[in-house]
Image (cartoon, rainbow, N blue to C red):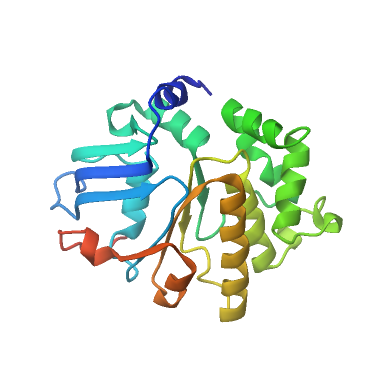
Length: 247
């Protein structure tokens, strides 16, 4: 991937990992479903956004990640206006600057834990170089992350299809964190875990983010998780539009 978008962002030291201003979004020919006057996440901050299923949380995350572009407004990732970039450039920025934990994890079932964790380093030179700054090489960086997330070395060569849900979740977190991206996005990653495992995972994730310096944007319908974060926001307080149910 080209490092040009990242280099542009690095030339402008930014206070925020992500910032939205006057963002509006609606599908073609449909009414506006998101109207976000302002929303920002500071560097190193852990932010929790709560809201019921179907309210538009995942659409917001897709805008921040550059998967979607707004109809109006500005979206910045560490000072870089990603809404002004082409699709290919947004892909580069996402690969370099954003780690993503999906609700269903999206691991490659036939690859080992180590191989899944290293995928961002194969796709992004920036993530690979950052991983090498943190350890002897990217493989050692992956091993350190997996250890931090309580995945034993005896598991590292196993295909992820043989792991429990909780173990797969931690592999997804290691993949998102490797190379210390400035922003980590987590989309309902604890929805399939019981209360004890949710708390355990959140403590591990928060500690890993502190050690890598990654900001964390975590969305969930479960407001009992709010106490694990620096700041908690109700989605309806961000969005001035009345969003219909998402498909």
